[in-house]
Length: 261
Ligand SMILES: NC(=O)c1ccc[n+]([C@@H]2O[C@H](COP(=O)([O-])OP(=O)(O)OC[C@H]3O[C@@H](n4cnc5c(N)ncnc54)[C@H](OP(=O)(O)O)[C@@H]3O)[C@@H](O)[C@H]2O)c1
Image (spheres, rainbow, N blue to C red):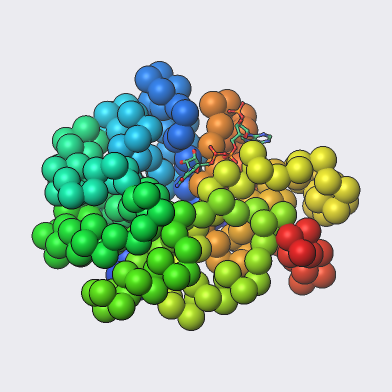
């Protein structure tokens, strides 16, 4: 993949393009959510990750509206809590009202309810997709076996699985299993779960004049993993987006992959 100065997208099986980097909003409430999303959109992010459970969809929606960008210019993901299984349509309608939009770009099952795949829930997601209330549907925190259960019941694979991910969690088999089902891997908690002081990271960061966080995020993008870092601080929101002006060598990429071994 060639380094460029702008963000890159990946195409989901539902036919929709998702920007590889998004802004995470977990634990950002009230002004933090509003200001964080405004800052992210000013800096250049065009993808925001929220969830019913985050309780900030209204502030996220207000920030998108006040940004001056068109609704179609910003990719919005929200998620249905596992406890709302059986009330999926009502949950999505409430998300749309809170966000102040007619559709989301991606709607995810936040967790497998009680550890179960719940194909009935997935059927409700397919209905929402057909009704145009969401442009793509996926899951979060699902195992490959649970994804296979959804495919077996409906013939439709989730477009994406959002899971904890970073070089220290890299697992080639998981990547291959998801790819073979055309399920895009979206990583969450990329920084929080990483050892930012790791010497391999530090060496690569120094070689490029970048920070360890930027190397981790660039690693995701070069692998084609979607990644959604979160920060309360404008300077870090900007740091986390400034990853399109350098490129990791194959050797560096493999070295980072080995952190997960
Ligand atoms: N589907 C799920 O079950 C699930 C679970 C967890 C998260 N998520 C999503 O994934 C997003 C990201 O995950 P996360 O919020 O858990 O963790 P994260 O983005 O990996 O880490 C956030 C933490 O890292 C710090 N940070 C941010 N940028 C930094 C930088 N450049 N250098 C050093 N520290 C930095 C932040 O502190 P400051 O704010 O002080 O900068 C914050 O404490 C969430 O916001 C949410 O949207 C989904």
